[in-house]
Every structure is written in structure tokens, then in C-alpha cells.
Image (cartoon, rainbow, N blue to C red):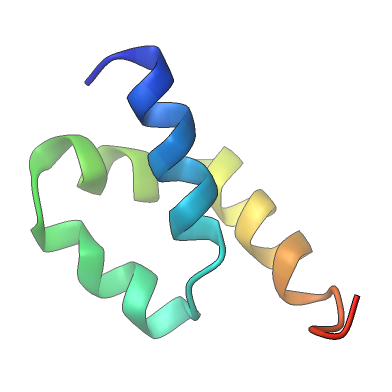
Length: 54
């Protein structure tokens, strides 16, 4: 996966609820690897703490 595509996918997947993001691991090996990183966990958790009205 190219860097540009990875950044876009990363941004989209961090917006998903945790259950749906976890289900995306079965799409392909690249997504599974991306979703298994500490950086993804941190970004996903920080986004989930932001109220949806902001």
C-alpha cells in the first residue's frame, strides 16, 4: 500500500467505531497490519474521546 493511500485509509478507519474498525482487519493483510499498530490504537482512542458535536 502506498504512503498516500495508507494515510487516507488510516484517517477513515480511525473514525469508525471500534467494533467496525476491528472487523476491517479481514479486508487484507495491509489493513490488518495497519489496524494492529500502536499508532492506530492511540489515534482511534483520541478521536473517540472528542465529542461528536465538535
